[in-house]
Image 1 (tube, rainbow, N blue to C red):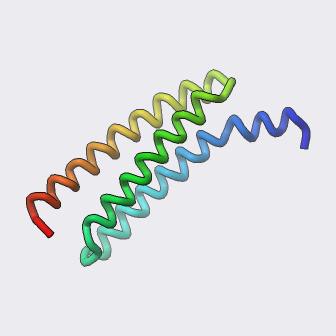
Image 2 (cartoon, one colour):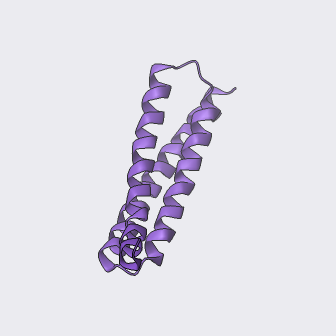
Amino acid sequence: MSEQTQEIRKGFNPIALTVILLVLAFIVFSVFRYFPNIHMLVSITLYFIIDIGFIVAMILGIKTKDKPIMVFSIISNSIFFVLLSLFTFLLLVAYGIGGP
């Protein structure tokens, strides 16, 4: 592969990771909605791992040299990180109220 093709492919990794993590978050949400007997800490842990993935995708986006990819990565990943962190916090509050 040529060097230019590798640069283009490397530049789209943060965008692809963001999309994959977003789809994964919706899949986790739907699976735990249809199977309510699964323990709540499993879903909280999975959301926490996805949240860390958004931080990694944002760092990868910041390291790219392409300006539009960098801006998209910072904005989208920070929004998704905040929203998923808020959702995870609300799940933790619900788990604390409901108890084990």
